[in-house]
Image (cartoon, rainbow over all chains, first blue to last red; front, side, top):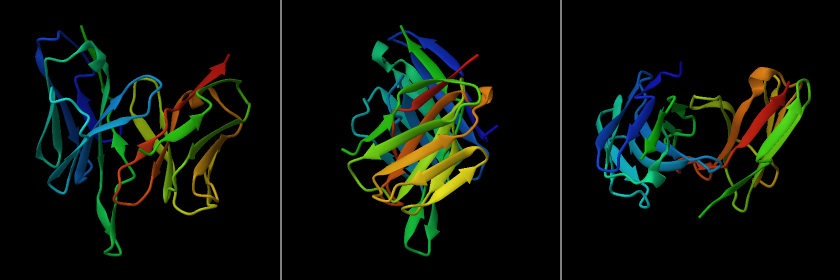
Length: 120
Length: 111
């Protein structure tokens, strides 16, 4: 148990469906992330919410839409997906903190178990 | 953009054998991390390294931060069945930058 819970664990959807992935963290962290994991590829960062700001990877298609209503909850809204979007979607959280007033550290990520998404 | 080359891509070993894997980059990193992903789960942090030359152990796992700051190594001694999974390296150029990930090393233990 990592303290990060993702639902659902598995999702099959058609290309015309709309669905949402949910993530909740119980660690008191102030940053949350969505990653896409495809087989034999590096983890791909999709979105970050930290310190109430959103940072996004500009290569992520607009059919993926994140929502972070508070520091403990994160959603990924999906609409009109393509078969190539089939992958494992991982949520993670971390704690940003100031190191001697100079920089923030965010390297220790806590991941959920992921949602295995299949787009037909 | 920055990339990490992680090798080998997969390893088939006998129980009890030692395992070595590594990550290299064309860029300098200030932090190196090693994560492990068990089947059906998300990655879990194993070891974090913050100084060039640093050698850090976590049980049977030992990781090193390369002197050039462009590589890192992970060794597992006397492997056991629960070591199976995918091991990821990740590097961070500065503490306010996002992580750069390797593609993973899949460890399979032959019965």
